[in-house]
Amino acid sequence: MTQTEYINQAEEHLLHVYNRFPVVFDYGKGVHLYDTDGKEYLDFASGIGVMAFGYGNPEYELALQKQIQKLTHTSNLYYHPPLAEAGEKLCKVSKMDKVFFTNSGAEAIEGAIKVAKKYAYLRDGFAGHEVIAMDHSFHGRTVGALSVTGTNHYREPFYPLMDGVKFATFNDLDSVKQQVTDKTCAILCETLQGEGGIYPATQEFLEGLRSLCDEKDILLIFDEIQCGMGRCGAMFTWQLYGVKPDIMTTAKALGGGVPVGAFLVTDNVAKASLVPGDHGTTYGGNPLVCAAVAKSIDLMESMKLPEHVQELTPYFEEKLQRLTQDYEFVLGYRGMGFMQGLLIDEHIPVGQILTKALDEGLIVLSAGGNVLRMLPPLIMDEAGFDEMEVRLRRVLDVIE
Ligand SMILES: *Cc1c(COP(=O)(O)O)cnc(C)c1O
Image 1: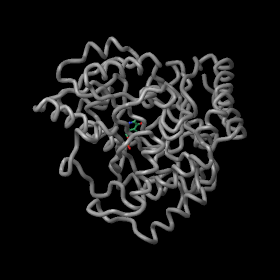
Image 2: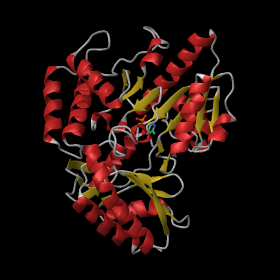
Image 3: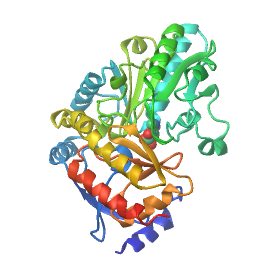
């Protein structure tokens, strides 16, 4: 079938909630994807930060194949070896104490909110607590996660959302303090805002949040769903700041390509929040995804991917710096590690660049505020960054 035929077949049956690019991907290898006509694309999106090891890692594939042949689902009424293994490994690399596996990022956020609410409920003896979240944040599309997502056009049609959410300005500690009341149970933010436009947190902001939370017995939640799992040069980005949350969420790259997320808590929080009966999931943490999580963490460590990201970041940033110098409408760049954004002048819609980049065989993303977002697989090497620069220049050369 031609790509157009696949697209027509899909559009006839799928609920139209995405404006998809007109390309039909068939398979991937390393840092490249191939469409059904065999055209090659260099991947600087990783399926939105998921495919940390790129495509076709033989060790990863073998681990999943073996698990599929053994067992893919048991429910959470029982134990299975991959669950024990994934739990131990994730707690170790995250430096958190207890984990709950979910099927998505949004569900990890839902769980984190429930933990914070239950913690405050047990402490105070009554419910009705509040969460402070950030403007321009993104935490997912379920009703709870949407309630703490600071982008109006995602939210408005679905009011009323969860009650008791207040918004503050990211990187502005005073604006957070102004929203604190006796009822505040949690402060939630991404360590590095992704969808909102690639805004890294400042050191002072995260330290300030930590002190504020300690002072008032408020739980600090870091959403590491996009920026975590090695992407910024540490297993989790808060580790680079030395500011530890009480609750952390992860997903996207956690399983190297299978749908899995998790929320993790410290021992203190675990002892004083959710108990049996408070939370659950049918699929969450099933043998297949847990085998993927365990293998992903092994690979992160054996391939030294956080270290690789740290080493290659200057090379990546040098390219972004040169692009900023050479094109008037590229206003600058910001980010950390392999999570970077090129700031594009408002008169050039970034979507136009994305479409042309695909024609040139380069997959990139956008983010809020007309940002061209790049999330390459963590295995990207110098040759890959060189290739990105060549292809992106071909696109930018014809933009006006
Ligand atoms: C993608 C994302 C989510 C939501 O994850 P889903 O798996 O799409 O539900 C939440 N928070 C952040 C920071 C994300 O980037």
